[in-house]
Amino acid sequence: MPLLMLDLDNTLVDRDTAFRDAATDFLAEHALPQNDLAWLMSLDASGYTPRQEVARALADRYGTALPDSAVRALLDHGAADRVVLADAVRDALGRAINGGWICAIVTNGRVAQQEAKIRNTGLDEIAHGWVVSEAVGHTKPAPEMFRAAATAVGASLHGAWMIGDSAHADIRGAVDIGVQSVWVSGGLPWSEAAFRPTHVADDTASAIGHVINAVRPPTAQ
Image (cartoon, rainbow, N blue to C red; front, top):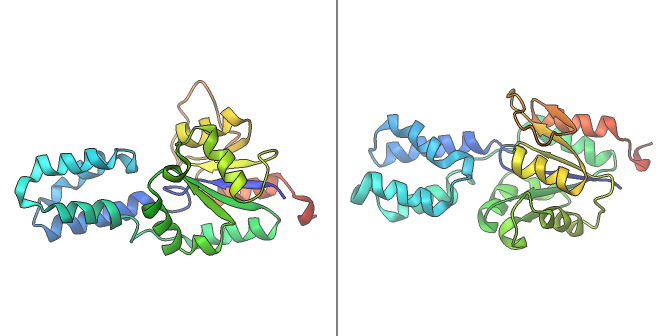
């Protein structure tokens, strides 16, 4: 059975929208300027800014007006408690699994936070398994992440596909290990010259659909 690896944040779940909602509530709850939302979203950088840097920047900006517990709550639970699994993505995953694909989530981040997202959205009952960079000791695009994913679900990287929104972490990682890939573009143009995805899709459901239509596992024939 072939392996389909999928990124979590801003691929399987809309992490940015969840964090935006959390940040909006955070600013309102602590009587902070609502027009700081754009600054906070830029600081967060879709979760790529290290947690410690975000916390330090918040402390520098708001000082004693903001308790440390509020910062921890935002960073630990803000997005994780608000992410949802879109029906279209859920349905596409179901079609992939029913078609004979083994689905594994490959995500950078902290175990507690990423596993909370997986469980809160019900992905733990859909995917065959997952790996989180904190537990693996490497981050995408390191090949160890993808090898760990294959091992976690008892699959091979031969004939595998990777779907993700990050050109560097997901697509570069796939290219480096020699597997095919779909970049979830969100309507943006591809800008990397050194490597390219196998396919580009506007959204995750379409990306999954491309893979399962392009490759027919023996069990699905």
